Amino acid sequence: NQNQQLLRNKLKLVYISTICDYKNQINLLKALFILKKKGYNIQLDLIGNIDKKFEFFFYQQLKNLNLIKNINLVGHLGKDQLVEILKKNNVTIFPSKFETFGISLLESMASSKLILCSNKSAMPEILGDAGLYFDPDNPDSIAKCIENLFDENFNYTQFTKRAYNKAKNYSWKKCSEETFNFIRFINEKNFNN
Image (cartoon, rainbow, N blue to C red; front, top):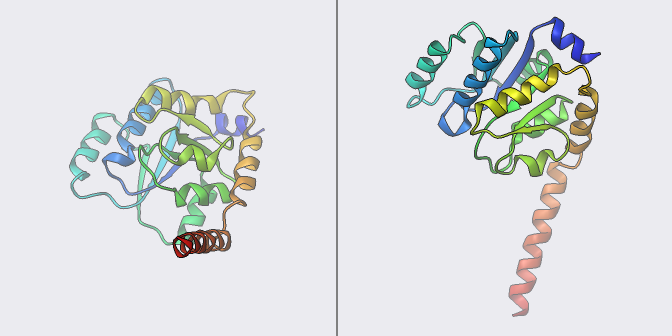
């Protein structure tokens, strides 16, 4: 069972995003601190560059929360390297407060990853019922969402299958066809007026 594997081993989370204020890594760190105090063994890989204006504050929080050994700052990766990181992690997490679409979310869905996600912005529209949600403004909500994974009745496979199947709804071909049809519709509407 996937849940027992999570309990026996270290839970490995990955967050793919630039490290900056609105991407909400600080509340994620606070949630991991809550879970660490409860005895959970969780590792987080942060994929993406750090915004220089945010760097000092981020490192101070990492140090203050005593999470330096739990966080792996990977930096920016190419697509092939990203695929390898996704293979090594159990769960992808997206605590961002503002997203327009979420390509990284879609890539995680297509990789059959369990996804924990902010209930804000476009994320719920994309993910639908294929993931677990939390309030990104509340570290306790984020922690509770992660803690749910350790429940012996949690059905890990149900969510990974849903995510993979939902990702099939998105393709560049479909995107280009819908965009072209929309442009044609607007053009015809303007031409007929």
